[in-house]
Length: 512
Image (cartoon, rainbow, N blue to C red; front, side, top):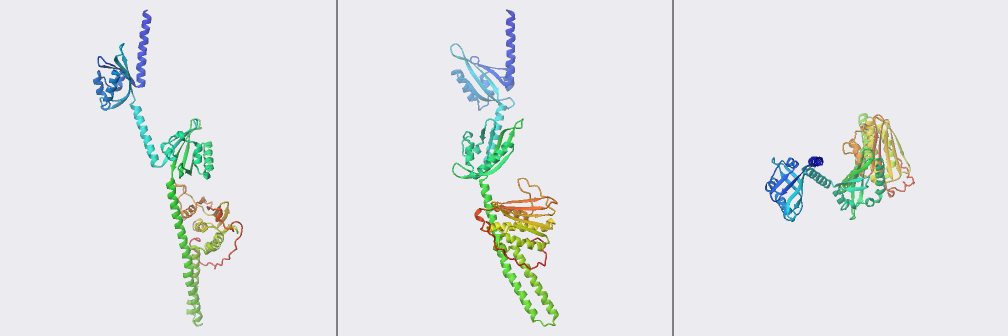
Protein backbone atom coordinates (compact mmCIF):
# COMPACT_ATOMS: atom_id res chain seq x y z
CA UNK A 1 0.00 0.00 0.00
CA UNK A 2 2.92 2.41 0.64
CA UNK A 3 4.18 2.15 -2.97
CA UNK A 4 0.96 3.34 -4.59
CA UNK A 5 0.77 6.23 -2.16
CA UNK A 6 4.37 7.23 -3.07
CA UNK A 7 3.50 7.10 -6.75
CA UNK A 8 0.43 9.24 -6.28
CA UNK A 9 2.49 11.85 -4.41
CA UNK A 10 5.09 11.85 -7.17
CA UNK A 11 2.40 12.29 -9.83
CA UNK A 12 0.95 15.21 -7.92
CA UNK A 13 4.37 16.82 -7.69
CA UNK A 14 4.90 16.40 -11.43
CA UNK A 15 1.48 17.85 -12.13
CA UNK A 16 2.31 20.86 -9.98
CA UNK A 17 5.57 21.37 -11.80
CA UNK A 18 3.76 21.14 -15.15
CA UNK A 19 1.20 23.68 -13.96
CA UNK A 20 3.92 26.11 -12.93
CA UNK A 21 5.67 25.67 -16.29
CA UNK A 22 2.38 26.16 -18.15
CA UNK A 23 1.67 29.35 -16.21
CA UNK A 24 5.11 30.72 -17.08
CA UNK A 25 4.75 29.88 -20.75
CA UNK A 26 1.28 31.41 -20.96
CA UNK A 27 2.30 34.38 -18.81
CA UNK A 28 -0.65 33.82 -16.50
CA UNK A 29 -1.26 33.10 -12.85
CA UNK A 30 -4.07 31.74 -10.71
CA UNK A 31 -5.67 33.23 -7.65
CA UNK A 32 -8.35 32.46 -5.08
CA UNK A 33 -10.45 34.73 -2.88
CA UNK A 34 -11.87 33.28 0.37
CA UNK A 35 -15.08 35.11 1.24
CA UNK A 36 -15.14 34.22 4.94
CA UNK A 37 -11.54 35.21 5.69
CA UNK A 38 -11.39 38.01 3.06
CA UNK A 39 -7.98 36.66 2.00
CA UNK A 40 -6.56 36.50 -1.50
CA UNK A 41 -4.11 33.74 -2.41
CA UNK A 42 -1.86 34.10 -5.51
CA UNK A 43 0.21 31.59 -7.42
CA UNK A 44 3.97 32.20 -7.67
CA UNK A 45 3.69 33.14 -11.33
CA UNK A 46 1.07 35.73 -10.47
CA UNK A 47 3.43 37.24 -7.90
CA UNK A 48 6.28 37.36 -10.43
CA UNK A 49 4.09 38.94 -13.08
CA UNK A 50 2.85 41.86 -11.00
CA UNK A 51 5.39 42.01 -8.20
CA UNK A 52 2.47 42.33 -5.76
CA UNK A 53 1.34 40.28 -2.83
CA UNK A 54 -2.02 41.62 -1.62
CA UNK A 55 -3.52 39.56 1.18
CA UNK A 56 -7.05 41.02 1.33
CA UNK A 57 -9.69 42.35 -1.06
CA UNK A 58 -8.94 45.86 0.15
CA UNK A 59 -5.24 45.50 -0.59
CA UNK A 60 -6.06 43.94 -3.96
CA UNK A 61 -8.16 46.93 -4.99
CA UNK A 62 -5.29 49.26 -4.16
CA UNK A 63 -3.15 47.56 -6.81
CA UNK A 64 -5.85 48.04 -9.45
CA UNK A 65 -5.75 51.14 -11.66
CA UNK A 66 -7.97 53.86 -10.08
CA UNK A 67 -10.19 54.00 -13.16
CA UNK A 68 -10.84 50.23 -13.01
CA UNK A 69 -11.41 49.78 -9.24
CA UNK A 70 -15.16 50.40 -9.22
CA UNK A 71 -15.77 47.87 -12.01
CA UNK A 72 -13.55 45.23 -10.34
CA UNK A 73 -15.38 45.66 -7.04
CA UNK A 74 -18.78 45.38 -8.78
CA UNK A 75 -17.70 42.22 -10.61
CA UNK A 76 -16.44 40.60 -7.40
CA UNK A 77 -19.61 41.51 -5.47
CA UNK A 78 -21.82 40.09 -8.22
CA UNK A 79 -19.81 36.91 -8.22
CA UNK A 80 -20.32 36.58 -4.47
CA UNK A 81 -23.95 37.67 -4.22
CA UNK A 82 -25.34 36.50 -7.59
CA UNK A 83 -22.93 33.75 -8.53
CA UNK A 84 -21.98 35.49 -11.81
CA UNK A 85 -18.62 34.60 -13.39
CA UNK A 86 -16.02 37.30 -14.05
CA UNK A 87 -14.55 38.03 -17.50
CA UNK A 88 -12.81 41.37 -17.54
CA UNK A 89 -9.62 43.17 -18.62
CA UNK A 90 -8.07 44.95 -15.65
CA UNK A 91 -5.15 47.35 -15.39
CA UNK A 92 -2.73 46.95 -12.49
CA UNK A 93 -0.25 49.57 -11.30
CA UNK A 94 3.16 48.21 -10.32
CA UNK A 95 5.30 49.65 -7.57
CA UNK A 96 7.52 51.44 -10.13
CA UNK A 97 4.48 53.09 -11.72
CA UNK A 98 4.31 50.86 -14.81
CA UNK A 99 0.87 49.65 -15.90
CA UNK A 100 0.18 46.03 -16.82
CA UNK A 101 -3.02 44.84 -18.47
CA UNK A 102 -4.47 41.52 -17.34
CA UNK A 103 -7.32 39.49 -18.75
CA UNK A 104 -9.07 38.05 -15.69
CA UNK A 105 -11.54 35.18 -15.66
CA UNK A 106 -13.05 33.81 -12.46
CA UNK A 107 -15.91 31.60 -11.31
CA UNK A 108 -17.65 31.44 -7.89
CA UNK A 109 -17.51 28.23 -5.79
CA UNK A 110 -20.53 27.42 -3.57
CA UNK A 111 -21.05 25.13 -0.56
CA UNK A 112 -23.83 22.57 -0.14
CA UNK A 113 -26.30 25.33 0.68
CA UNK A 114 -25.53 27.24 -2.51
CA UNK A 115 -23.69 29.99 -0.70
CA UNK A 116 -20.58 31.35 -2.49
CA UNK A 117 -17.58 30.62 -0.32
CA UNK A 118 -14.70 31.19 -2.75
CA UNK A 119 -14.00 32.87 -6.05
CA UNK A 120 -11.33 31.08 -8.10
CA UNK A 121 -9.78 32.67 -11.17
CA UNK A 122 -6.85 33.14 -13.48
CA UNK A 123 -5.25 36.30 -14.87
CA UNK A 124 -3.16 36.46 -18.03
CA UNK A 125 -0.80 39.35 -18.71
CA UNK A 126 -1.75 40.67 -22.17
CA UNK A 127 0.11 44.01 -21.99
CA UNK A 128 2.43 43.34 -24.95
CA UNK A 129 -0.43 41.97 -27.03
CA UNK A 130 -2.60 45.01 -26.37
CA UNK A 131 0.31 47.37 -27.13
CA UNK A 132 0.93 45.55 -30.40
CA UNK A 133 -2.77 45.74 -31.24
CA UNK A 134 -2.80 49.45 -30.44
CA UNK A 135 0.21 50.05 -32.68
CA UNK A 136 -1.50 48.07 -35.41
CA UNK A 137 -4.66 50.13 -35.01
CA UNK A 138 -2.64 53.34 -35.16
CA UNK A 139 -0.85 52.11 -38.28
CA UNK A 140 -4.15 51.14 -39.89
CA UNK A 141 -5.62 54.52 -38.95
CA UNK A 142 -2.59 56.32 -40.44
CA UNK A 143 -2.84 54.20 -43.58
CA UNK A 144 -6.55 54.90 -43.89
CA UNK A 145 -5.94 58.61 -43.41
CA UNK A 146 -3.10 58.59 -45.94
CA UNK A 147 -5.30 56.76 -48.45
CA UNK A 148 -8.07 59.28 -47.95
CA UNK A 149 -5.71 62.25 -48.32
CA UNK A 150 -4.15 60.75 -51.45
CA UNK A 151 -7.56 59.70 -52.84
CA UNK A 152 -6.35 56.15 -53.28
CA UNK A 153 -7.33 52.74 -51.98
CA UNK A 154 -5.53 49.41 -51.73
CA UNK A 155 -6.50 45.81 -52.38
CA UNK A 156 -5.13 42.29 -52.10
CA UNK A 157 -6.05 39.17 -54.05
CA UNK A 158 -5.37 35.70 -52.58
CA UNK A 159 -4.62 33.20 -55.34
CA UNK A 160 -5.50 30.14 -53.25
CA UNK A 161 -8.84 31.36 -51.93
CA UNK A 162 -9.54 33.57 -54.98
CA UNK A 163 -10.75 36.24 -52.56
CA UNK A 164 -10.19 39.98 -53.00
CA UNK A 165 -9.93 42.24 -49.95
CA UNK A 166 -10.43 45.98 -50.41
CA UNK A 167 -9.45 48.78 -48.04
CA UNK A 168 -12.19 51.00 -46.63
CA UNK A 169 -11.16 53.88 -48.85
CA UNK A 170 -11.28 51.70 -51.96
CA UNK A 171 -14.72 50.43 -50.95
CA UNK A 172 -15.89 54.03 -50.76
CA UNK A 173 -14.33 54.77 -54.14
CA UNK A 174 -16.16 51.83 -55.73
CA UNK A 175 -19.41 52.60 -53.91
CA UNK A 176 -19.36 49.33 -51.89
CA UNK A 177 -19.94 48.64 -48.22
CA UNK A 178 -17.80 45.52 -47.77
CA UNK A 179 -15.36 43.33 -49.68
CA UNK A 180 -18.04 40.64 -49.87
CA UNK A 181 -19.89 42.82 -52.38
CA UNK A 182 -16.91 42.82 -54.71
CA UNK A 183 -17.56 41.06 -58.01
CA UNK A 184 -14.90 40.82 -60.71
CA UNK A 185 -17.42 40.85 -63.55
CA UNK A 186 -19.03 43.96 -62.11
CA UNK A 187 -15.59 45.57 -62.10
CA UNK A 188 -15.04 44.83 -65.79
CA UNK A 189 -18.50 46.14 -66.63
CA UNK A 190 -17.65 49.45 -64.93
CA UNK A 191 -14.77 49.95 -67.37
CA UNK A 192 -15.67 51.80 -70.53
CA UNK A 193 -16.08 49.45 -73.48
CA UNK A 194 -13.10 50.82 -75.43
CA UNK A 195 -10.76 50.15 -72.47
CA UNK A 196 -12.12 46.80 -71.30
CA UNK A 197 -10.28 44.49 -73.71
CA UNK A 198 -7.03 46.44 -73.46
CA UNK A 199 -6.95 46.28 -69.68
CA UNK A 200 -7.97 42.60 -69.59
CA UNK A 201 -5.16 41.63 -71.93
CA UNK A 202 -2.64 43.67 -69.95
CA UNK A 203 -3.77 42.13 -66.66
CA UNK A 204 -3.76 38.57 -68.01
CA UNK A 205 -0.25 38.90 -69.44
CA UNK A 206 1.08 40.32 -66.18
CA UNK A 207 -0.54 37.51 -64.15
CA UNK A 208 0.79 34.80 -66.48
CA UNK A 209 4.30 36.27 -66.36
CA UNK A 210 4.13 37.09 -62.63
CA UNK A 211 5.12 40.74 -63.08
CA UNK A 212 3.70 44.16 -62.13
CA UNK A 213 1.25 46.05 -64.30
CA UNK A 214 -0.35 49.49 -64.29
CA UNK A 215 -2.93 51.35 -66.33
CA UNK A 216 -5.11 54.45 -66.35
CA UNK A 217 -8.74 54.19 -67.42
CA UNK A 218 -12.13 55.87 -66.86
CA UNK A 219 -14.69 54.02 -64.73
CA UNK A 220 -18.46 54.30 -64.80
CA UNK A 221 -19.66 54.77 -61.21
CA UNK A 222 -22.97 53.47 -59.80
CA UNK A 223 -24.38 57.01 -59.77
CA UNK A 224 -23.68 57.42 -63.49
CA UNK A 225 -20.62 59.68 -63.15
CA UNK A 226 -17.26 58.81 -64.70
CA UNK A 227 -14.07 58.82 -62.65
CA UNK A 228 -10.52 58.26 -63.90
CA UNK A 229 -8.52 55.75 -61.86
CA UNK A 230 -4.82 54.86 -61.96
CA UNK A 231 -4.22 51.23 -61.00
CA UNK A 232 -0.91 49.56 -60.17
CA UNK A 233 -0.39 45.97 -59.01
CA UNK A 234 2.60 43.86 -57.94
CA UNK A 235 2.81 40.07 -57.39
CA UNK A 236 3.75 38.53 -54.02
CA UNK A 237 5.51 35.21 -54.53
CA UNK A 238 6.11 32.29 -52.20
CA UNK A 239 9.28 30.32 -51.57
CA UNK A 240 8.60 28.30 -54.72
CA UNK A 241 8.61 31.44 -56.84
CA UNK A 242 4.93 31.14 -57.67
CA UNK A 243 2.49 33.96 -57.04
CA UNK A 244 0.56 33.61 -53.79
CA UNK A 245 -1.06 37.03 -53.64
CA UNK A 246 -1.33 40.17 -55.69
CA UNK A 247 -1.46 43.59 -54.08
CA UNK A 248 -2.31 46.87 -55.67
CA UNK A 249 -3.43 50.45 -55.31
CA UNK A 250 -6.12 52.42 -57.11
CA UNK A 251 -5.82 56.21 -57.17
CA UNK A 252 -8.54 58.61 -58.20
CA UNK A 253 -6.83 61.03 -60.61
CA UNK A 254 -10.01 62.54 -62.04
CA UNK A 255 -9.31 66.06 -60.84
CA UNK A 256 -5.66 65.79 -61.86
CA UNK A 257 -6.68 64.69 -65.36
CA UNK A 258 -9.18 67.54 -65.58
CA UNK A 259 -6.52 70.02 -64.50
CA UNK A 260 -4.05 68.58 -67.02
CA UNK A 261 -6.66 68.71 -69.76
CA UNK A 262 -7.43 72.32 -68.86
CA UNK A 263 -3.72 73.20 -68.96
CA UNK A 264 -3.40 71.32 -72.23
CA UNK A 265 -6.24 73.34 -73.71
CA UNK A 266 -4.67 76.58 -72.45
CA UNK A 267 -1.30 75.58 -73.88
CA UNK A 268 -2.92 74.59 -77.16
CA UNK A 269 -4.72 77.91 -77.29
CA UNK A 270 -1.43 79.68 -76.60
CA UNK A 271 0.23 77.80 -79.44
CA UNK A 272 -2.65 78.64 -81.76
CA UNK A 273 -2.43 82.30 -80.76
CA UNK A 274 1.32 82.35 -81.28
CA UNK A 275 1.00 80.68 -84.68
CA UNK A 276 -1.71 83.16 -85.66
CA UNK A 277 0.51 86.05 -84.58
CA UNK A 278 3.44 84.65 -86.55
CA UNK A 279 1.17 84.24 -89.56
CA UNK A 280 -0.03 87.85 -89.21
CA UNK A 281 3.49 89.20 -88.62
CA UNK A 282 4.81 87.28 -91.63
CA UNK A 283 2.05 88.68 -93.79
CA UNK A 284 2.60 92.23 -92.57
CA UNK A 285 6.37 91.91 -92.92
CA UNK A 286 5.96 90.74 -96.48
CA UNK A 287 3.29 93.28 -97.40
CA UNK A 288 4.72 96.35 -95.63
CA UNK A 289 8.50 96.18 -95.14
CA UNK A 290 8.93 93.94 -98.17
CA UNK A 291 6.84 96.14 -100.42
CA UNK A 292 8.50 99.30 -99.10
CA UNK A 293 11.96 97.90 -99.80
CA UNK A 294 10.86 96.81 -103.27
CA UNK A 295 9.57 100.32 -103.94
CA UNK A 296 12.87 101.74 -102.66
CA UNK A 297 14.75 99.49 -105.06
CA UNK A 298 12.65 100.75 -107.99
CA UNK A 299 13.10 104.39 -106.98
CA UNK A 300 16.85 103.92 -106.70
CA UNK A 301 16.77 102.45 -110.20
CA UNK A 302 15.03 105.53 -111.48
CA UNK A 303 17.59 107.76 -109.71
CA UNK A 304 20.39 105.81 -111.36
CA UNK A 305 18.78 106.27 -114.80
CA UNK A 306 18.68 110.08 -114.27
CA UNK A 307 22.33 110.40 -113.29
CA UNK A 308 24.82 111.68 -115.92
CA UNK A 309 26.71 108.92 -117.64
CA UNK A 310 30.03 110.51 -116.73
CA UNK A 311 29.28 110.69 -112.96
CA UNK A 312 30.69 107.26 -112.21
CA UNK A 313 30.99 107.85 -108.43
CA UNK A 314 27.31 108.71 -108.01
CA UNK A 315 26.23 105.90 -110.29
CA UNK A 316 28.39 103.48 -108.29
CA UNK A 317 26.82 104.57 -104.98
CA UNK A 318 23.33 104.18 -106.42
CA UNK A 319 24.17 100.75 -107.82
CA UNK A 320 25.44 99.66 -104.39
CA UNK A 321 22.26 101.03 -102.80
CA UNK A 322 20.13 99.10 -105.30
CA UNK A 323 22.03 95.92 -104.41
CA UNK A 324 21.53 96.52 -100.68
CA UNK A 325 17.80 97.08 -101.23
CA UNK A 326 17.65 93.89 -103.31
CA UNK A 327 19.40 91.90 -100.54
CA UNK A 328 17.06 93.41 -97.93
CA UNK A 329 14.00 92.46 -99.97
CA UNK A 330 15.27 88.89 -100.21
CA UNK A 331 16.09 88.69 -96.50
CA UNK A 332 12.68 90.08 -95.51
CA UNK A 333 10.99 87.58 -97.80
CA UNK A 334 12.99 84.66 -96.35
CA UNK A 335 12.29 85.76 -92.77
CA UNK A 336 8.61 86.16 -93.62
CA UNK A 337 8.46 82.69 -95.14
CA UNK A 338 10.29 81.14 -92.18
CA UNK A 339 7.92 82.74 -89.66
CA UNK A 340 4.96 81.26 -91.47
CA UNK A 341 5.21 80.00 -95.04
CA UNK A 342 2.10 80.98 -97.03
CA UNK A 343 2.67 77.69 -98.85
CA UNK A 344 1.40 75.89 -95.73
CA UNK A 345 -1.97 77.62 -95.98
CA UNK A 346 -2.21 77.58 -99.77
CA UNK A 347 -0.73 74.23 -100.77
CA UNK A 348 -0.78 72.12 -97.61
CA UNK A 349 1.80 70.35 -95.49
CA UNK A 350 3.34 68.16 -98.19
CA UNK A 351 4.07 71.02 -100.57
CA UNK A 352 5.26 73.32 -97.74
CA UNK A 353 7.77 70.73 -96.51
CA UNK A 354 9.12 70.17 -100.04
CA UNK A 355 9.63 73.92 -100.38
CA UNK A 356 11.19 74.20 -96.93
CA UNK A 357 13.55 71.27 -97.52
CA UNK A 358 14.88 72.89 -100.69
CA UNK A 359 15.38 76.20 -98.88
CA UNK A 360 17.07 74.43 -95.96
CA UNK A 361 19.51 72.72 -98.32
CA UNK A 362 20.34 76.07 -100.01
CA UNK A 363 20.87 77.89 -96.71
CA UNK A 364 22.75 75.19 -94.77
CA UNK A 365 24.65 73.26 -97.45
CA UNK A 366 23.19 70.02 -96.07
CA UNK A 367 21.72 67.65 -98.64
CA UNK A 368 18.05 67.21 -97.77
CA UNK A 369 15.92 64.37 -99.16
CA UNK A 370 12.18 64.37 -98.60
CA UNK A 371 9.77 61.51 -99.05
CA UNK A 372 6.10 62.49 -99.21
CA UNK A 373 3.31 61.09 -101.37
CA UNK A 374 1.78 63.33 -104.02
CA UNK A 375 -1.69 62.44 -102.69
CA UNK A 376 -0.82 63.24 -99.08
CA UNK A 377 -3.82 65.57 -98.88
CA UNK A 378 -4.92 68.29 -96.49
CA UNK A 379 -5.58 68.13 -92.74
CA UNK A 380 -6.73 70.49 -89.99
CA UNK A 381 -4.58 73.56 -89.64
CA UNK A 382 -3.30 72.66 -86.16
CA UNK A 383 -2.10 69.24 -87.37
CA UNK A 384 -0.31 70.66 -90.40
CA UNK A 385 1.23 73.49 -88.37
CA UNK A 386 2.43 71.10 -85.64
CA UNK A 387 4.12 68.73 -88.10
CA UNK A 388 5.71 71.63 -89.96
CA UNK A 389 7.10 73.18 -86.75
CA UNK A 390 8.47 69.81 -85.56
CA UNK A 391 10.30 69.26 -88.87
CA UNK A 392 11.48 72.88 -88.84
CA UNK A 393 12.96 72.57 -85.32
CA UNK A 394 14.48 69.17 -86.08
CA UNK A 395 16.24 70.54 -89.17
CA UNK A 396 17.52 73.48 -87.13
CA UNK A 397 19.07 71.04 -84.65
CA UNK A 398 20.60 68.99 -87.48
CA UNK A 399 22.35 72.11 -88.81
CA UNK A 400 23.48 73.41 -85.43
CA UNK A 401 24.58 70.28 -83.61
CA UNK A 402 24.75 67.08 -85.66
CA UNK A 403 27.57 67.75 -88.14
CA UNK A 404 25.69 65.58 -90.63
CA UNK A 405 26.01 66.33 -94.35
CA UNK A 406 22.71 64.65 -95.20
CA UNK A 407 19.24 64.57 -93.71
CA UNK A 408 16.20 62.58 -94.72
CA UNK A 409 12.62 63.73 -94.12
CA UNK A 410 9.78 61.26 -94.36
CA UNK A 411 6.10 62.18 -94.17
CA UNK A 412 3.48 59.45 -94.42
CA UNK A 413 -0.18 58.90 -93.73
CA UNK A 414 -0.88 55.55 -92.06
CA UNK A 415 -3.99 53.98 -90.63
CA UNK A 416 -5.52 56.65 -88.41
CA UNK A 417 -2.32 58.66 -87.99
CA UNK A 418 0.29 60.90 -89.59
CA UNK A 419 3.95 60.00 -89.10
CA UNK A 420 6.79 62.48 -89.65
CA UNK A 421 10.47 61.53 -89.30
CA UNK A 422 13.70 63.51 -89.61
CA UNK A 423 16.81 61.31 -89.78
CA UNK A 424 20.43 62.49 -89.89
CA UNK A 425 23.78 60.68 -89.98
CA UNK A 426 25.55 62.96 -87.55
CA UNK A 427 27.21 62.70 -84.15
CA UNK A 428 24.05 61.66 -82.33
CA UNK A 429 22.87 62.50 -78.85
CA UNK A 430 23.84 61.07 -75.49
CA UNK A 431 20.33 60.95 -74.10
CA UNK A 432 20.34 61.49 -70.31
CA UNK A 433 18.29 59.13 -68.16
CA UNK A 434 14.82 60.34 -67.15
CA UNK A 435 14.65 62.22 -63.86
CA UNK A 436 12.82 60.49 -60.95
CA UNK A 437 9.10 60.55 -61.57
CA UNK A 438 9.50 61.48 -65.25
CA UNK A 439 9.03 59.28 -68.32
CA UNK A 440 11.25 61.30 -70.65
CA UNK A 441 14.80 62.64 -70.28
CA UNK A 442 15.37 66.39 -69.88
CA UNK A 443 16.53 67.99 -73.14
CA UNK A 444 16.72 71.43 -74.72
CA UNK A 445 13.99 74.01 -75.01
CA UNK A 446 13.49 73.28 -78.71
CA UNK A 447 12.91 69.57 -78.14
CA UNK A 448 10.64 70.35 -75.19
CA UNK A 449 8.65 72.64 -77.46
CA UNK A 450 8.30 69.92 -80.10
CA UNK A 451 7.15 67.41 -77.52
CA UNK A 452 4.66 69.88 -76.07
CA UNK A 453 3.16 70.60 -79.48
CA UNK A 454 2.73 66.91 -80.24
CA UNK A 455 1.26 66.13 -76.83
CA UNK A 456 -1.31 68.89 -77.24
CA UNK A 457 -2.80 66.85 -80.07
CA UNK A 458 -2.56 63.56 -78.10
CA UNK A 459 0.32 62.39 -80.27
CA UNK A 460 3.59 60.56 -79.64
CA UNK A 461 7.00 62.24 -79.79
CA UNK A 462 10.12 60.05 -79.92
CA UNK A 463 13.87 60.53 -80.26
CA UNK A 464 16.15 57.64 -81.23
CA UNK A 465 19.83 58.45 -80.95
CA UNK A 466 23.21 57.28 -79.74
CA UNK A 467 26.66 58.92 -79.91
CA UNK A 468 28.08 58.48 -83.40
CA UNK A 469 24.95 56.80 -84.79
CA UNK A 470 22.84 59.72 -85.93
CA UNK A 471 19.47 60.85 -84.64
CA UNK A 472 15.87 60.20 -85.62
CA UNK A 473 13.15 62.59 -84.49
CA UNK A 474 9.67 61.16 -84.90
CA UNK A 475 6.21 62.68 -84.40
CA UNK A 476 3.03 60.60 -84.69
CA UNK A 477 -0.32 62.38 -84.61
CA UNK A 478 -3.71 60.67 -84.57
CA UNK A 479 -6.24 61.79 -87.18
CA UNK A 480 -9.94 61.16 -87.40
CA UNK A 481 -11.40 59.85 -90.61
CA UNK A 482 -13.32 63.06 -91.17
CA UNK A 483 -10.10 65.11 -90.77
CA UNK A 484 -8.69 63.81 -94.07
CA UNK A 485 -9.69 65.71 -97.17
CA UNK A 486 -10.64 64.16 -100.49
CA UNK A 487 -7.04 64.45 -101.61
CA UNK A 488 -6.02 62.32 -98.65
CA UNK A 489 -8.28 59.61 -99.95
CA UNK A 490 -6.39 59.39 -103.21
CA UNK A 491 -7.02 62.53 -105.29
CA UNK A 492 -3.69 64.19 -105.98
CA UNK A 493 -3.51 67.94 -105.53
CA UNK A 494 -2.26 70.20 -108.27
CA UNK A 495 1.45 70.85 -107.97
CA UNK A 496 2.20 74.49 -107.25
CA UNK A 497 5.31 76.08 -108.67
CA UNK A 498 7.53 77.77 -106.13
CA UNK A 499 9.76 80.51 -107.47
CA UNK A 500 12.75 81.13 -105.21
CA UNK A 501 15.49 83.62 -105.80
CA UNK A 502 19.03 82.32 -105.40
CA UNK A 503 20.16 82.43 -101.78
CA UNK A 504 23.31 84.47 -101.45
CA UNK A 505 23.65 84.80 -97.69
CA UNK A 506 24.19 81.95 -95.20
CA UNK A 507 22.20 81.67 -92.01
CA UNK A 508 23.80 80.79 -88.70
CA UNK A 509 20.95 78.40 -87.95
CA UNK A 510 19.03 75.99 -90.10
CA UNK A 511 15.68 77.04 -91.49
CA UNK A 512 14.18 77.70 -88.09
